[in-house]
Length: 639
Image 1: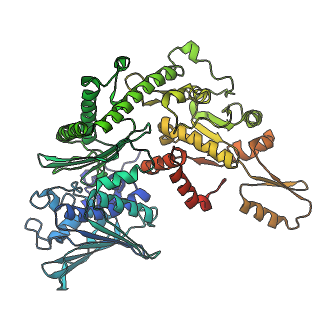
Image 2 (image 1 turned 135 degrees about the horizontal axis):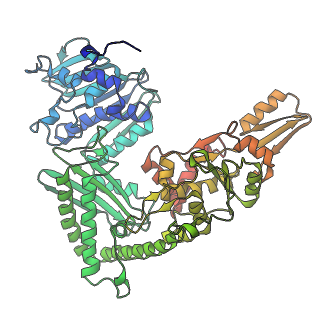
Image 3 (image 1 turned 90 degrees about the horizontal axis):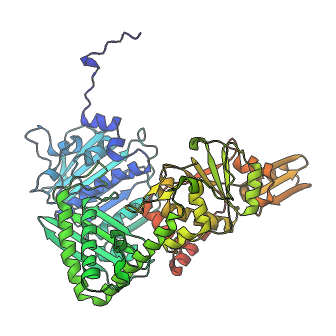
């Protein structure tokens, strides 16, 4: 036995800075790309809070070649006087103490995003070095920190006419996986902030590539929603814009209906993107449903035949794009990363303001009102048709639904953890895959040609499609119940790995994209939980005598040929499809777990992925053509 004593001395009490450095993911989510950029957001958010308070209209963000980030604003500057309680400079209190800052004093900041009080102190703790410069009271003050600890007291350097705060830091590479910044990620955040704070100038300078960009918006959310919705055909001619204030909570909503079948809601609280929603979203949805329902039922718009339709909240939100931005004095978030608002009172405020203003809009715009109601009725009809079609693939009757698709060649193992299924392009390749697989744990489902493009199809058409029904039934998943029609039930998922295997050509890439569109739109939890993969079959078989090698791209082919030396008697076979490989070759290159390469599909950024699927698979041709023209040079059929 280990006789080491467990005493009071064994209990460690970590100060704020030490705890942040020991458990960084508790404060910033992770120590990868997201966490690294989250630090920059924390510093920028402090400057934006100065803008919200009315004391700042310019913010400069610089990415330096040496790994430093600098954020400069022309706000009031953090106070540097001695803090009465702590006995040190107020600046040092803000930089080193969790829960310290002017955000808690309502006289200093009316609204603010960084109300957890760990923002700048967290950045300081996770920086190898940080220098803060304050321009205040006609003087320049400076203090330097190493790994969150001050190395000298605040210095007064010289006089100045400037006013504001400059934070310059380098993230600690012993904590983060990498300290290389992605320009596009930061540019997108600054662009977003410019729309959320009309009149605020934001500048981004990347010294690594000598790039300078500025972001500014005069019309705010109205301008933002036209950009987010530019690939859609709008129903209402002008953006529906709602704004109001109640109990010191400011609400701004921009919304637009389009001909698509999707609901897109972008929500913000004090400039923080609340990706998981919260009470402000609930309030908006209640107001929208209540207001539109009044017009569909109370004003006789529904025909006698349509009155049997039972309208749901989903029907009222189909085809809507919304941006909701609220400014709250004391926001309560779930978690430090601030992804879900939990203030109950905010929901009621948003509900009231949206309900009143939307009623006025609908009264004043009868043509747009009729288009919206027609869209709602169409959505309800499609939902009912989809429900009937969906019931065909639900596993309600164990006898009927135990019959799997005839095309499916199932595996013999029963434990889903040990099983995988290949979705294979075409019956020919499917036949080869069936012969080459390991029947114990590998199942094969051949798909006939290109499956339905779900981005363009109405929901009931999707669930009537034979190939899509076969995918649902084979996987053992189902969509929703009468109460909740959007939740994917994966409790009976039959395979841990779902592998898309198509030809290594443009048609194969298109089929992969169609299948991925289905997964993203209707089976997203399978992607989020890491079940979706893409197989990588080779492009070439290179033979010389008894020696043979496979190449997955042109570069590999050239390297192999160079190693073989003389090109004489070398035979190069270009695989135009999976069916051109025999069963042994397909197993050896693409299906053998010991040798194959699988690309795991994940969602780094939901909004970006949503936009790309809309562009590539949606109705609008011009944005797709623009995308192809800009990105064709980077396209790779096989990586």
